Image 1: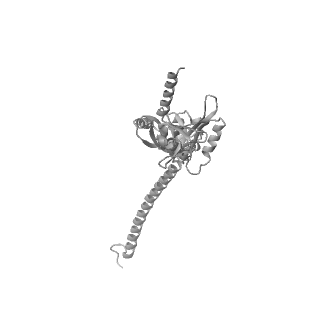
Image 2: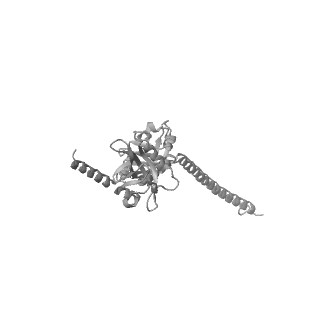
Image 3: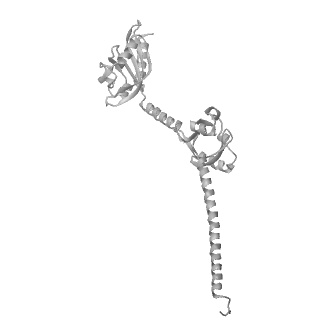
Length: 298
């Protein structure tokens, strides 16, 4: 390889490093910065002029004094540090989450002369992951039944409450259609309305009289909604349902008692009217007896 090829390769490598979105930092084995690309400027807010010749420990937030020392000790032993997630302090004082990969740098003779760090700001992704974890925990611990299906209606997820109510385990439900719960009591027309509604991107609300794994029946109130991807296309459907069997039983019992009371009142009113009529007749007879038969001399 001639001198021109070597210079061209170095220029190409420098261009690649400088155009990377990741922070790429070169430092000595003592942690002094010797190179600082544009990605590092965007990630940490310091310019190359501000950082070159300075200790990398500038980026350490309070409470982590030994972290960089421990990383450099591994590098001095020739050991790389891969995908190390930690936090760093930006120039503006903001703490960010970063993923670091630190590799030993060797010269042509194989001697260790420094370390190269590739750093990526994962703050946004970490926040998303934390929110997703919170949501996942909320769904897992929810007192409502939660079912997620693909656009064909095949089950992709059920939460523990689904298993408690229906008797089906996640393994038994996965890949199946919610039709496994059909009792035959819900008209086919209602299912058609349901599918037409959610495929149109709208929310459906209603009730099902479904069947558990053991064959017993139960009532559930359901809200089924489309879940859209970043492009706005429907990616799956989510059902949030409540077991309202006991509520239905109490409502039915209340209706029966109200009906019985109404019937009793009707009978009582009828009896009361008869009693009034009877009292009226008794009073008329008593009046006649007091006055005696018409035309009789006393």
